[in-house]
Image 1 (tube, rainbow, N blue to C red):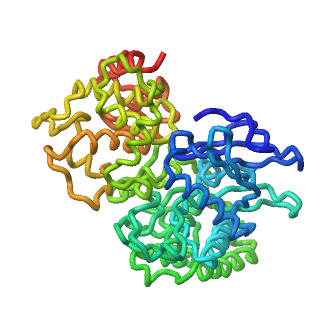
Image 2 (cartoon, helix red, strand yellow):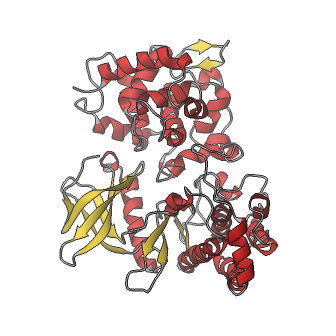
Image 3 (tube, rainbow, N blue to C red):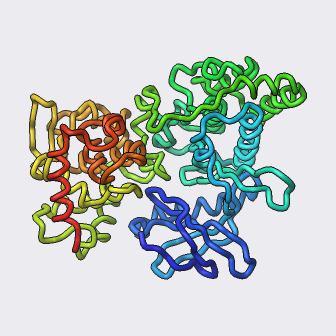
Length: 483
């Protein structure tokens, strides 16, 4: 993704963050002398009309709701190179995900934040919009400039939101593992406002305990004993698997939290006890609940900024066409390095699945060369590995289009069209665990593919057993990257 100098009348200063489909930049409104956030569609998605339309639709929805509990959109436009952008509120205090890196919030703060998030969700619901991706990284924090002391919490990222006119149409699995309602993991699960209530419950659980709920839905007080039983009841009702048993609306959830917050606020002895009894806790780097990484892992790549299952037609034909247009002159891969031409589009697609340090088409091509010498019919029954990317069927089933909603592929069904894009999905999800690991990010990703991200994190780099493998990958990356 190129670094733009400006967007319309807005100066661009620096990158704030990026995902698989867009990047957000810190900009400056020269006319009003004020900072803004500018979201720009990634250049390799510019030719996908459905992606462009969803990007622009997000700006329209945010503008229509126009609530102080959501980021507000001020302007929209298109860069000289054709990439659309929109200008929105700058959250100068970051995201809730960043704040939760220090562990659970104090009880009062967690309950107030959850209530304010619920108010934002209710504002969406009143406009017939279901968010579908409530998680800490989509909750932004802004200093309450001109609004008195404190902070303002705002919802963001309506990239996979559903509106009233589309709620009754076919829905594909979409959301983020750990926060998505059970019906969101199903094809045509028809998520509605109660799906967001589940997301609110999961978010609140994380605010209170420092971690998202597992499939067993332990009461928050079992994780943090200072949490009152009344809080347990409100949160667990939101997390009911049966949507009819949940709070009926985000407003009902917010009202229940409001009653609890008021009681705690007016009891200084209770508040002091909570503060005294809650030890400082930091989340361990790379920590991941195994239950979250189970059935929900089929839609794991949604956590990288947008929902690939919503935008992928299953066969990947449109994405492949885009990849071909994106690399006509060897932009991503050398054309004289022996990479089979029939796989170049798939390799570019996998290597640009998300914005992640180390991930590139050259890495994907190098791994395929080492894994199989680009042999689409590789068969190693002893290792239970098949195809050009050496997938084990019981692992590939999580990363194939549709995930666990489709049957486990048989070895003969593990084609390049299935297995190469799955590499991108796998690396985009587990690669997030490797951000603090020493060494070459690309080689850490390659080692995680061969073993696991957990092992690479534990070893703080490529384990000795895989040094020879990653050395070959490194040599090939250098051979495949354009000069």
